[in-house]
Structure formats: C-alpha cells, structure tokens
Length: 243
Picture 1 (tube, rainbow, N blue to C red):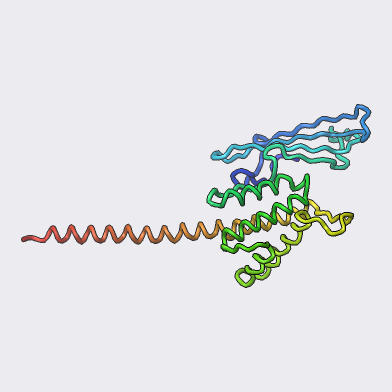
Picture 2 (cartoon, rainbow, N blue to C red; picture 1 turned 30 degrees about the vertical axis):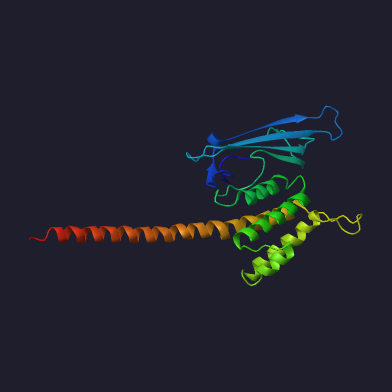
C-alpha cells in the first residue's frame, strides 16, 4: 500500500493521513517445495501521527505468489490465504471505562475471535447484548428472548429488529441443533455486522448519555458559579453601606 492513504487509529480513534514517515512494509517470498507453491508473506507497520498517541500497528498477510513483476520490481499477489493483526490483535475499538467491564470484555473477545471462529464471536456478541440490556434498561429475565421482548416499544423498531437478529444468529453458536448433523455456519462478515451493532449501541446508549449528562452538569455548574458570584457581590454591597 503506498503512503499517503487515509487511516483511523485503533487506539485513539483519530483519522489521519499516513505518510512515508509513519509507514513501512516488507515482504518475504518463499517456496521450499511446500504444497502451496510460491508464497509471499508481507508485513506492514503504521505509527499513529497523533502526538498524544504515537501507538503503532503491525499486520501481516500471506498470499499465493507464483510470478515476479519485472516492471514493478516485486512479486505478484495472486490470492490472499491468511491475514493476521499482530498489534493490536483485533479491530476492537477503545471504549470509555464507565461502560461496565464485563460488557467490554465480551465485546473485545468477540472482536478477537471474529475471523478464527465467527460462530463463537456471534455467541459472545449475543452475551454482550444481554449484558447491555440488563445494565442499561435494567431488564432481567431467565431468557434473552424474553428480555428482548420486554424491550419492545422502548427503542426504535429497526434497532429492536437488529437486536433480535443478534439473538437469533448468536443462538447458532450457543445452542446445538436437534439434528447434530445439521451445521449452520456464521461467516466472518456476519460476525462483523453483529459486532458493528454492539459498537453502535455502546455509542448511542452509553457514550451519548454520558456526554449529555456532562453537558447538562456543565450548564448547572455555570449557573451555580454565577449565583455564587451574585451572592458574593450582594454581600459586599451590604457591607459597603455607610452606617
């Protein structure tokens, strides 16, 4: 990937344009009589240009590569076989600590195993969703389906349908089918969609509420400070009255 591309830091969530000074990549081509033939292992390092962050990411990819491009002076990337996020190990976003730790732990683990086991990731998204409903809306029942049903009418219908969809897809990993020979897979992109909903709920329900509370508290604080100044001024005026 050439330098000069747009990038979002997974640590500070800042958008940035990555230049040569923040980016490097390398590759290793090999064959050694392996069963796949020519292979190309690429590595990529990006350093966040934000002076308050300066974190770095490391990723690697393995491609089928059987020919060399003389014009570009590099091996062709024929087919992507494997991909690794080495640092950070997942694409989990950084969320504030005022969100319950158990919810964030399930979210991070769902992100971590998304590609390795999409079905397990979906199950964790389902569990994460249940934790959010119980904490944010104080709805606790014996079954998640009943908790989601109790949520109906309290939130946007489209969001409710998406939440119920997370439950249904998560059930694939949480509960075995009656016919044990029936295998229903969850694709990585489907697990990603579930994670995306969890991220949306964390932002819309927790972060927006917190920021709203902080803004309202700031207004109240301004009012109280103004009242203190006014009261102090009135006291000083009274003491200045000649006897």
